[in-house]
Length: 219
Image 1: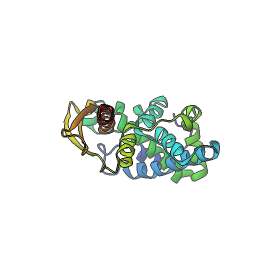
Image 2: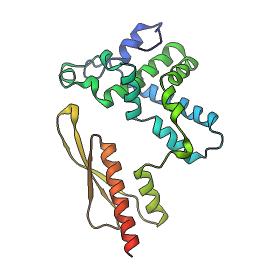
Image 3: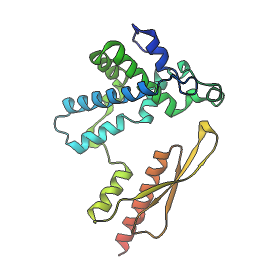
Image 4: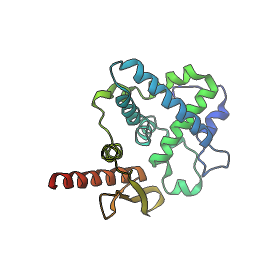
């Protein structure tokens, strides 16, 4: 699973313990692992793509360091079956939930850093994310809709968009989020749904941007 042996097995146990299972859980390790991952990926991109500018590097890092990519890595390494969950999360299939698997990957990286130091943690990150790193091309990484909308508004001297969660529906393991996006050029709120708050915000931003561009074309 890990291709890593812990000198301190208690760190491994803690990294695999979700907050639903115990008060002493992996959330602090998740925080640490997130920092390790962000730095190592940033370093890798900086060293391997000397011609990429700051914006391209930032977008490439965001494409790699996000819940979806982390969950894909965790699923590929079969981490889900090892996560210790509370009874409720276990019944609802929490080991398959994107956010839980992604957070566990970060917690494991934090635990490896504490167990063996930064250099070994870097090696593990580059190994686990090898496929994703091999595919990334900073110059081809497009801006996400929220960033594009923000830049569109700023270029015209307008205030930034406001996002509001309008509804959360569905069972805990398969929730649907509905988010509204308001901008000063539109009278109504544009809403969109997704399987995460971020996905819903991105879709709403994309819809708002399309509406604004349509208004400019018609003007």
